[in-house]
Image (tube, rainbow, N blue to C red; front, side, top):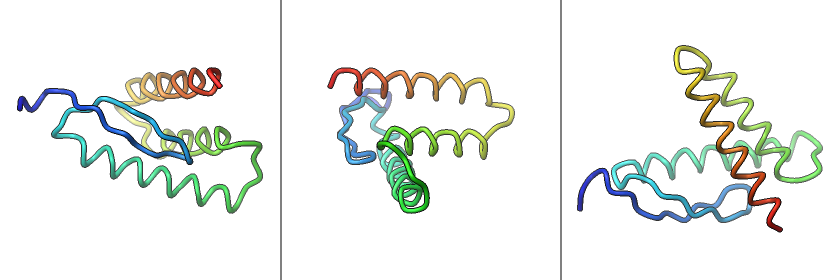
Length: 94
């Protein structure tokens, strides 16, 4: 299989299933990052009041962006905007 080939991966984040395409070589890292994000969201739920899981996902993304700003800030902002748009799209379909 070609290393750059995209494979479908089902991930759970904030109690929801997401099917995404990733490079096979990046699958393990993506799963680890989703686990870290899901753990952070669970931690935030214990400490802060929120209307729904989207509040906690947004808080998690903002914390990540603040911790990782720097020379790749514009790339990170673009990626975060794309993720938020996808979440809004999924939540709007319910």
